[in-house]
Length: 247
Figure (cartoon, one colour):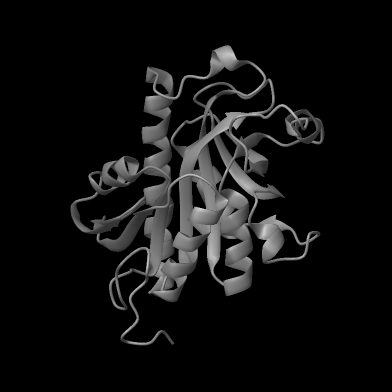
């Protein structure tokens, strides 16, 4: 039970504000975009990268929160949301495709994540798997399919590196050869925290290019923008159903 006087130091709200079902995104402005897809919404707080809305989508009450870029900062957000009452967290984001059959604009549901995030090694044993909730994961996949989206499901690589360095080789190719579908920066943190704290988690991403072909990277192009909207609709519909179970 959270102390009634507790105020989350980064999200900057106290008990009774966060709804049990929460959608999270990296970008504070994508947080606003999700909220505006709901019938009712209210911006509750915005501190640093953590922007928070409460919203009503098809009669179900949700919270929507941004967490910024990278595992450690996102982990702060997830931990504070849980301390404030979150029972389900669904992440909607972008990713780089790691397989040739995945095209720019395709959706990818993460069934699990490789842990190269720079955070989870400090809170869980190295061999502990980062996996989401099976039912929520399948629900995201089935919802995207029902909306006629091109969607894939499999392992993500959560990597703490966006720009490669000079001294050490990238692990992208070896993870791709092992079967990873996408690379992104937060899913492993979400899944590990979900396991530790006993809440449901799931994640879906829009591919904004192939990491082995830098010419494919088009995060602001028309195809990616349209696919992001489909991803947001997918997440809202699954969150709506989760909210019924979380009540």
